[in-house]
Length: 161
Image 1 (cartoon, rainbow, N blue to C red):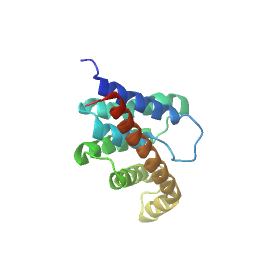
Image 2: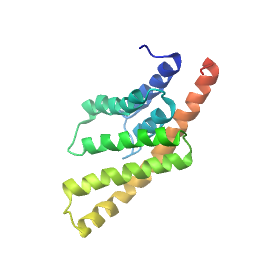
Image 3: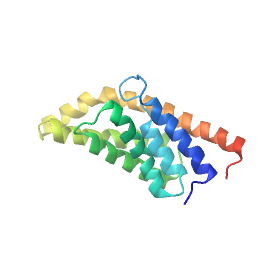
Image 4: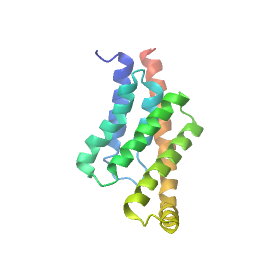
């Protein structure tokens, strides 16, 4: 089934956001959490919504590299897209919840893979990750706003349903 005009515009926004991931940026200031939430809240076809952030990650990870934690990162993005399905909106609250979901899921993976699986290892892992969480929030809020308001502008100009 071909993509609708709306879906083609959504995909173009996601492609541009994914390409931004390839540019130098501060740690964790990247667009993929925003892409996952955006896809979950805007795509009518759920399978495409889930595939969009995963494809964005796969394509850019070819250039940036894969790691042991990559499957867990991808899983976190599936969770964020699913959150978009459930909450059906993008706002500061849903973006912050998405950031928190990514932080918890990925750092549980880091703890499991790279730290002693003890209370001390858990505490060390999450404590050392806190500065990256701040960067994530900044990036997630910024890129979510760019995607949301950019899409709203384009949808109005192109008279998308």
